[in-house]
Image (cartoon, rainbow, N blue to C red; front, side):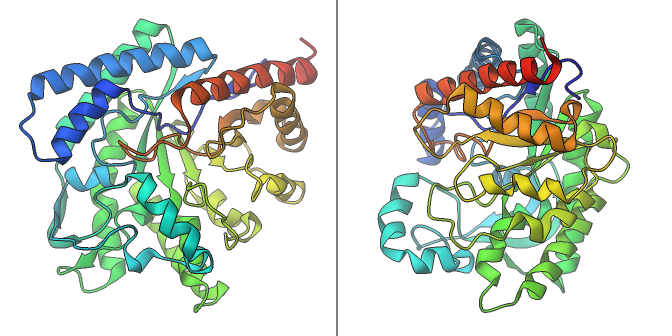
Length: 389
């Protein structure tokens, strides 16, 4: 989708779950017996309501809030791919295999912060059997829910997020594959099935890839920039394999730096990885460009040319602060990028999702909706400046 006569708006996908749905998900996590039909009916209602609310906020291209995912934005897929299992995990917080320099430098902060984030399902994952996609029924429900909700709300643009290969359980143990490359190839073949189902349904596919960027903080140091880039390039090629044969204009690629609202002092610069992002076989690129560690990186596009027919989905609203952006600031962020890459090639978005897991929310829902309304209002101001209307 392009902004033909005005700046369109969207977001990154994950929205704060409503209390009724959270109660069902909590019971599932706690191992309680759940009425499955009542649970599915709750998800259906919640998706209808959240799509309507997105339209009311002025969002043009909506999602299902990722309400159909019972674990998180990435680990949900472990329930849809045969071959993964979770074994006893006695640790707390983040698995040590994915603790990077930011957490070491600010250990006291993270000792207080991590327990507040209410993540579950982080550690203990093992590849114990050959990988095979078995999530057809689950993704089919996600597709049907969103399409029905979009029709009911009168929304023409809708997308479903799905995880990228590099972001699937990076802390796993592997008992099957001889090499990491063999594992990634098998994983890409499995994920291709979910990607294909979403695209062929008529919805847009968004591929979420937090670990592509955030692994820099884990690899460097002790590794070098060259070590990290070799790691990242392999995963870019694997993602392109997973996207093979799918129309690029139906695919959005979202890259963030892990999303958590922490220091981020050791994030990889956008200029270091922009060539890999643009190498991905997607029609649009969703990037963090509103938070204070990455807003300045809009200048990357002063020298880097957006490829023809591609679209930029810059984050012009931060998901990580309770301060609601002023619409004039949103407009300013949109206009300066539009002047670099073309007004038709910019769609206003958020930095990341407002809820990375079922029980993890970055801001209060009332603030989330105020931010999305500010995004819509800022896009309207930018449209008047860019199109004179």
